[in-house]
Image (cartoon, rainbow, N blue to C red; front, side):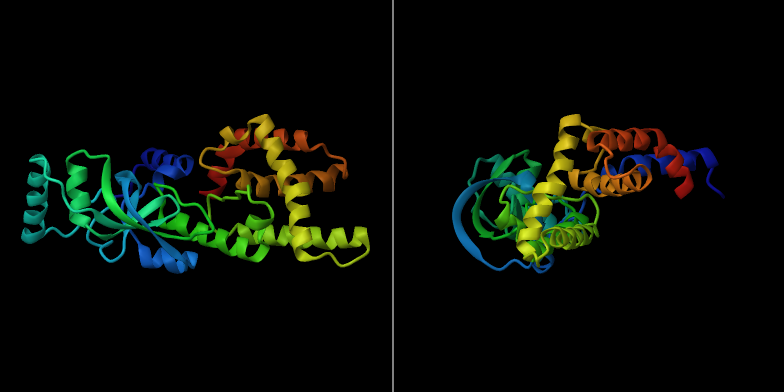
Length: 286
């Protein structure tokens, strides 16, 4: 039977307006996959630590056995009995051996101790004792991270490897909400390098162009967003998202009205047109 039209429309609207809810993590993430995507290499032993259980997001080799809440996905009599034994031990106040975790950014992956983590969660524990090995990463990872986020972070890592912006501007943090956007920034840097070379009448070293783009193109736009507090109108989006969108909008405005279009007015114009036009755009995409 065909789905009732308005019910389907309501569901589609919710899906479009609340993309973050759609990305709520439910499964553990494979550490080996993350290691491959982010090209993790160096690691160091961090010793015994107390770790927030909410920051444990994945597993080395059992990511298909538990969900993100450490509920068994494939319960067997043996696993159920083991989990109950651990829960009873915690209820008696026994101290269990520490788990072994790999740390990447601000999140953790279980190398050993999945059932201990599961039992601790069921007892309402917020923290767990762990032996920690930390892996170096050029990009931040936070709890709540999803596989899509990892793909975006992998693109971010490649962008930093190409531009060295993390070394040139250590306080930078350019993050997108969707994959495929960092190549746009690389194109912007190339274009900026070309015009800078035309202006200076000489070849511009790539790193000099990266710094010039960041200081004179990217950050002025971002600082305008911050000053006008427009990001709150774009739920689930980032400053980098708005930079890409506003760059296109600013280009079209300057093509139409000339090169002296005011940046602040362009930002407000885009924010207002987005707010008024999102429903129309949604129906055009349906």
